[in-house]
Length: 132
Image (cartoon, rainbow, N blue to C red):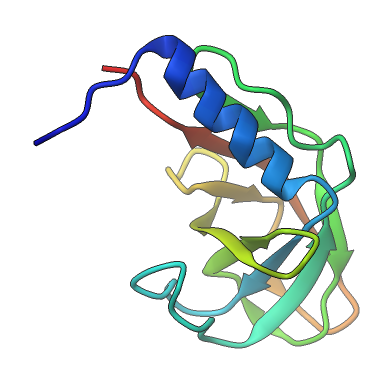
């Protein structure tokens, strides 16, 4: 059975997702993302970036796009491949791929390759709960 949801329900899901991230962190790693969000993080942790209390917007038409940049200082060198978003309590919320603009990733980076002490910045993130 496949559930079909309304735009109202899709937007409510986005709003809940946004609330989970407020005050949380986004951690960027090397390599490929794990099979599920419940799987332990893999790869080298490159940077941890804080979501501001208001950086996750409310949903609109089942889509939320975070356009405010989140940034942090790299603690290791490598190529960013994926990131995990965490609640302020440390529980995992989502995983997503990191790419440069125009390459179809879940998160958009200004630069994929980082060195220790580089400022790492992700400039956009989109989460979609499609209505049907």
